[in-house]
Length: 342
Ligand SMILES: Nc1ncnc2c1ncn2[C@@H]1O[C@H](COP(=O)(O)OP(=O)(O)OP(=O)(O)O)[C@@H](O)[C@H]1O
Ligand SMILES: [Mg+2]
Image (cartoon, rainbow, N blue to C red; front, side, top):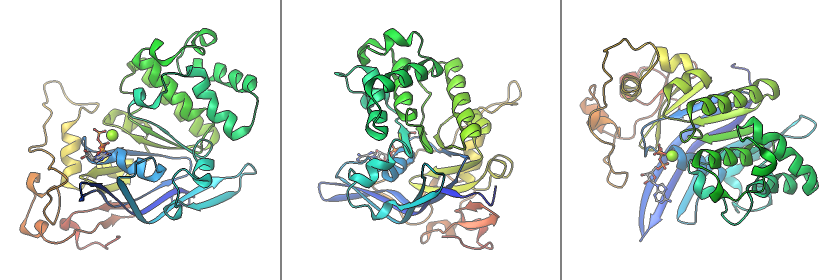
């Protein structure tokens, strides 16, 4: 694992939303990397900035978002298999030629809300085929063939008639499959799935995850999976990124996070979700307190007020991440005898 090439390396990503002259820092010094051919799971409570982080990288945010980073390095793969590095933080126009060439065949995203990512006035088949035609220049007919081939693999039955339907003729789960088809049709090197399967029933969810895993094993594709489902993390992830209030509080391999969770938040998160093997009658804990409002934050660790292990030192200045084992990083003062990695 250690020698694998990085497909994505993000260093100190910061995203701030500006409204009525007020600035709210939503993503804070976020650093993480994805090794080619592996799956990174991103977990954390609702509102911890998982979606905004990914939308910042894909440059999908509106003009009220200020995205800054020390470096966002994405390594695309040319048709001949050679690597082609891009520094995304340096790209001025989020919709310019460089970003457009990457989105689709190199990196694509399955959005959390399928309703808002489909256009109600176009047939679903045309919406799926569009990216393919744009990027490969193949004919409409050839693209249609590929869509017909992809639909059943994503659990969309009767593709011949479904392909000419409009989004409103589809159920929520079916629409979500169309959104997944749009993200997958160009066979991207990196696919970012933002809670892609929550509206799907368990069988289809398993099917889609299996398909993603198959693509990964056969073609060396990379996946970022945002999910609240720890069972799915255990099944899919090679590495796990735990976020809290816009920060990465812990990052490590699946074993690091599940067997040696070290940040008090990660430990609380793991105690609060159903995991396989929970004995009958064993109760799930909830994490006490609520996530604070991102607009009114005090200095120090964002989790301090909810943390059972909190001390005075937690409320001081910015807390760096410490590397407690190779590749295992924790942002907590308890580990300040380990080397700082930020
Ligand atoms: N366009 C926006 N303008 C201002 N604030 C925003 C915008 N989009 C998101 N936010 C805020 O950013 C924070 C992080 O939101 P985000 O959607 O990334 O959370 P999340 O971790 O994806 O949560 P969930 O698990 O519910 O999807 C929230 O406080 C949210 O209100
Ligand atoms: Mg989200």
